[in-house]
Image 1 (tube, rainbow, N blue to C red):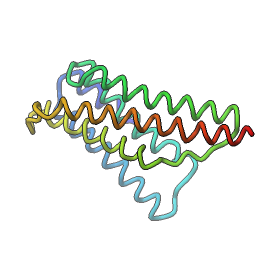
Image 2 (image 1 turned 60 degrees about the vertical axis):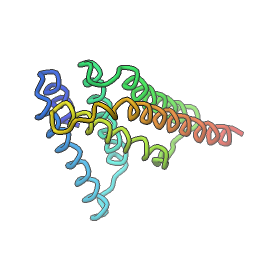
Image 3 (image 1 turned 120 degrees about the horizontal axis):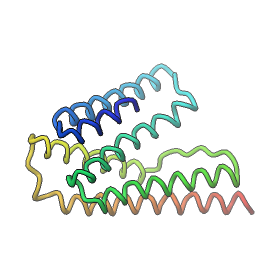
Length: 168
């Protein structure tokens, strides 16, 4: 989480290559941390909440910065943020109206996160000058948007059913 503001700062400053590498370091450190926690049975409730939150914060903040700079369509960043806000609002509503929950990631959620990470890394690689993917970006934007909306709808459907069941 601590690296997220620095990634955004580097993008705003125009240092796209450094932002790319710092994004990669943040992602790798998160993966190593998760692996170590699982391998040595060091998983905690706080870690279970903070780990996906850190992932989403890195992805969403970077996407917003890229959109603000005109390097990613604003409508796509809005979909990415909107999905996460809807899921967060649903989780909070469930918690306060029904009770505690264990929000395990779903397969559509994992596919969504993966697609968003691939998109952000691809855009960072592109704007840093490592690859030229300008021709394939528009269909990728649409694909990531569809995956994001579908995943968000899936979470709403599943948790609405759980809430209805809990209230009856």
